[in-house]
Length: 258
Length: 165
Image (tube, helix red, strand yellow):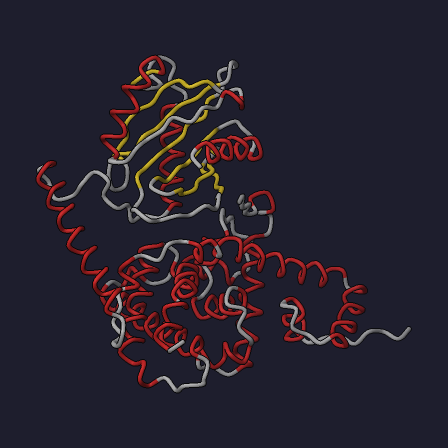
């Protein structure tokens, strides 16, 4: 068997993108079989491609914000124009009413413009601050759960729910109100019988934003799973759960809110 | 389907590309909005029968370049992370927690090529036409983008993105 011809870098890129013809592919396959380091590199490129799509494809499923579909073209596009006008009027009316009731210009459900990654960082910080607390881990304890939910829902301007994590061996400790990037946020705390704690950070999101991808990050020994689901952004933080354990709990929460 | 309707259909794809290009949602949607306004205004310049998607992404590319330039002119601190870019070019395995942050650290012209090839699955020729650069440049930017990203993500196996649902 003769030695396979070394493919050019452009050919390898095209190979990683599955854009080579079968004959070219056979030659490159043969060469890669003899060069495991290069094969590993190309495999890594493919994985990066898959990860990129996994990361950004959910954007395709999001509802397009109204400001982007505002029609400008002529012809028989009067219906969307009329609808847009109606929404605008409704928006002004709702804004006026809530502005009147709250005696301020921004409602508590003010759109949070910062990125989910910022939320994860703040959640990790809040976790590190409150989870070691022995005497005052929460402001309102699990014994007053109904009061806690009503209070936090009112402050966040969106309906807040307390997920049940008994299935994961976690009992609810209570919650507290925290300052967020652009408004109040809530923190719920849970613990195992052994006293290991996790916290769930909840903030109000702009209406109509729907993102279902879980993301993970680590901030100084605190692992955080975070995601956005309808009206709320969530960040689940733990100092001692493994990434897999934490993801299981995050999945459990996500499913309860479906 | 007329051009206007096809253009509206392409909005989710513009949003996906913009999100990956600039990072946060609000800035990305601002970019999409500016792009659409420009596209609506210039739609009469689009030649029927040619690739509308490539045309639209070219509009977005130009709007993006102008926005970045304007941001730099008003705020010199807004430059694209010179310190990080420099470190990446030295080839360290940076501790990047997330792929989106790694993407943000790529030089923007390399990021654009990688995203159009990977997310939009454009042919290399279409990418060249869209970004108005020679195809050789497309290939070299693609190769460099991937290699940088790989270097940044090395040792990050444990934090690979998982998507449920």
